[in-house]
Image 1 (cartoon, rainbow, N blue to C red):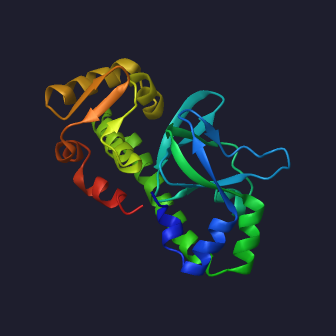
Image 2: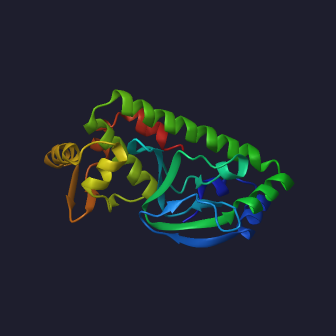
Image 3: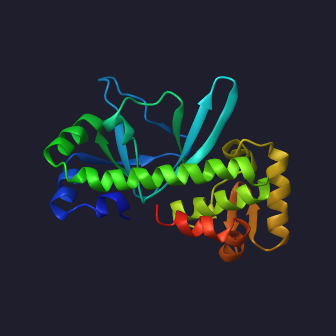
Length: 223
């Protein structure tokens, strides 16, 4: 499985990025973005994993405002600016990635500034994605938000079989577990999904997309 962001680069730039990367396996629940012992952060070009972007606050539980998969990368902000203290990156679906030291990538971007155009385009698309999810948090009901998150999760993991519990989904959406149980039960009765023992299967993606609003889910596939 390839990474969509690397794929958009010129062939020579793809090879240069690959030369500074090492393959890693990411585990569900793992937190990314913390500086290593040498003070450098890591950049992860995802190829199989999906990673949730969570806003954190001492007074509130984390709230998911984005989900990144093989179309993008985690940690690019550490190359361009200091690491945010209020944004946490947590692996939702385990899988593979290419990992580069942020310092090495910064040096490469200095040598190959044309790469910044592709990265800037991706970061703008990611900002739009975060804005869309933030608007959903403000305006949509829980069932709509759950449908949208499940569609995103399937797209990012490239699988209709998702290892997601009701508790995890409640944490991502910042709602009570019982609210997820009620909404998921409604989707199950409608034949959209089924779930058992911590695994959720999407049975009717088109129907679930409709519940999530087609105009949003269509645009999200371009991220």
